[in-house]
Image 1 (tube, helix red, strand yellow):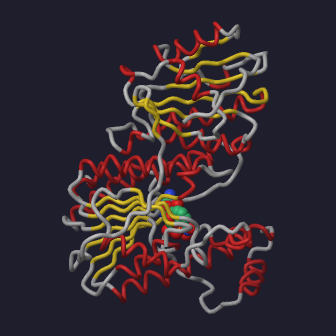
Image 2: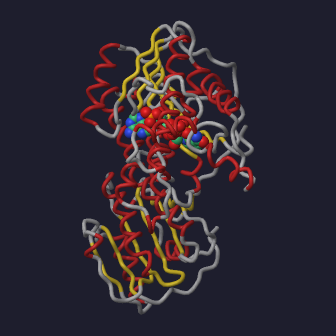
Image 3: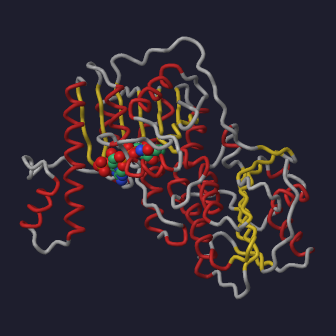
Amino acid sequence: MTSPHKDLPKGIFIFVGENDALLTTLAEKIRTLGQEHIFMDCATPVENIKVNDEVAGVFYFCKEPCAQSSQYVFSLLKHLQNQFVPHAIICHFSCGGRVFSLIDKSNVFHSAETGIVKTFALENPGLQVKSIDIRDLNNMPDVDVLWKEILSEDNLVEVGYDQNERYVIEANCVPYEGNPRDLPQPKTILAIGGLRGITAEILQSLVSAQDHLIVVGKSPIVEDTFVDVKDERELFRLIQEREQQLSPVVINEQVKEILLHRERTRVLSTLKDMCAKVSYYSVDVTNDSVFGPILDAIDMEYPKIDIVIHGAGVIRDNLIVNKSEREFAEVFDTKVRSLFTLDKHLSLKNIPYVVLFSSLAARFGNIGQVDYVAANEVMNAFAHELDRKSAGRVISFNWGPWSQIGMAARLEKNFRDKKIYVISPQQGCDIFLRELHCGQKGDVEVFVGEGHE
Ligand SMILES: NC(=O)c1ccc[n+]([C@@H]2O[C@H](COP(=O)([O-])OP(=O)(O)OC[C@H]3O[C@@H](n4cnc5c(N)ncnc54)[C@H](OP(=O)(O)O)[C@@H]3O)[C@@H](O)[C@H]2O)c1
C-alpha cells in the first residue's frame, strides 16, 4: 500500500530519457498541474543541462542502459544536486530492472541505476526519491497509480509494478532442507581477489589436499627488502632514512603496502601447503585486454573449473556531491567489468558453482558508497540472470561487515558502536561452506547480517 501523497514542489521538472509513452504521460500530468517541464535525451552531456530555475524534479528513463549510461545517472544527480528545491521529486524508471530481475530476464545496468538512486535518497533525506521498475511497458500501471506512488510518503525507494500490482523486495529466512551435498573432490577453484581479506580466509577453509587453486589479484608478488624488520616504526624509520625526499604520508603508505604484501605472501604460502597446486596471476581485472587472455590461458590449462569465486573489490567512500567520475569508475569496474570479462572468457553458465561477493549495502544503499552499491546491485542482478541460464549453483553473498579482516575491518568499532552486527571470520567461513553444501539451486541472493547467522 502506498501512503497519502504530498503537494507538488514548485520549480522546473526535467525529463531525461526516451520520449515515449511513460515519460510523456507524466510530463502531461505535470503540465496539467500548471508546472513547467523540459525534455532531454539520455545522451545530453550533464554539463549542457543548464537551468536557471530551481529544479522541482527529475524523471529519468533509459530503456536499454549500459555501463556508461548507468554512470550517467550518477553524474546527472551530482550535477543537479544543489539545484533541487526542498521535497523535489527524483523518479527513476526501469523496465525489467532490479525488482523484476528476480523473476524475468533483465538488463543488469537498470539495477546499477537503482543502486545509485537508493544511495542518493539516503544522502538527500529532504527529497522524494523513487526507483520504479515496470515489468512490461505494454502493460503500464495507470498514470494515477504511478502518480500516487511518486508522491507517497512511505520512504520506500525501490518498488515494482506489474500493471497496477505493486511489488517490493523482501528478504526471508529460508531453512536448509535435505541432506548436505559433497563438493567435487578433487576440485579446481578460481578465485578473483584471493590473497587477502575475506576471500583469502574463505579459501583457507574451502580447499583440501588434492585441489587445484588459481588465484588472481592485482599486486605482483615481489621480494620483501625489509624481510627481517617486523616493527612498523622501524620500517618507517628505515624507509625515511633511505628516501629522504618522501613525505610521512607517503612513507606510511609504503609501510602499509609492505604489511599487505607480507599478508599476501603468507596466504600464498599457506595455500600452497594446503593444495596440490596453486597458481597466482597478478593482473588489474578492470583491464580486459590483459585479464581476458589470462582467463583464456587458465581455461586451456584447467578445462574443468568447479568453483569460481569473484571477491575482487575496492571502496572509495565519498558523498555523491564530492565523488569524482574516476572514483566511481574504479569501484564499479573492479566488480562489474571484471565479471563481464569472466563470463565472456569462461562462460560462467557452464561452471557448477559461481559465487559472487556482493554486500548488504547493495540492498539498502549506503551513504558514501554510491559506486559500490551500484556495482553490487549489478552483481546481484547478474547472479539471478546467470542462475536462470545455468544448471549449476549461483550464489551472490550479500555480506554484512566482517570483523578483523577485509575492507570493513578498520570500521569495526564504528559498526559495534552503531550496534551493527559484524561477522567474525569463523562465522563467515562457516556460513560460506554451509551455503555451498546445504543451500538450494535458486537461492541466489544470500544475505548475511544481523539475524542471519
Ligand atoms: N570485508 C567485508 O566486510 C565485506 C563486506 C561485504 C562485501 N565484501 C565484498 O567481499 C569482497 C572481498 O572484500 P575484502 O574485504 O576481502 O576486500 P580486500 O581485503 O580489500 O581485498 C580485495 C581483493 O580484491 C583484489 N583487487 C582489488 N582490485 C583489483 C583489481 N583491479 N584487479 C585485481 N584484483 C583486485 C585485491 O588484490 P590485491 O591484494 O592485489 O590488491 C584483494 O585481493 C569484495 O568484493 C567486497 O565488496 C566484503
